[in-house]
Image: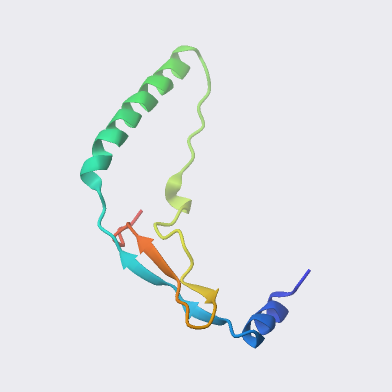
Length: 94
C-alpha cells in the first residue's frame, strides 16, 4: 500500500501537477427531461400504491447527502494537460 504522501511525491517527480478542475457550464435540457421524469413519477406512484395495497413496507432514502457537484475541484494531471468537466447543473442547489 502506498501512502498518499509518497504517491504525491512520485507524481510530482514525474511531472504531474495538482491542478484545479476546469468546468464548462453546459445548458440544461429541461424541456426534454420534463416528459421523461413526469412518466417516471407516475410509474413510481403506481408502484408505491401497489406496495401499500399489498401490505408491503417502504423505505425512503433522503437525498440531502448528495451534492449537486459530482466531481472533485482539484485532481492530478500530466504536463501541459488540463482536466475539463462538463457541468450541466448550472450551479443550482440540490
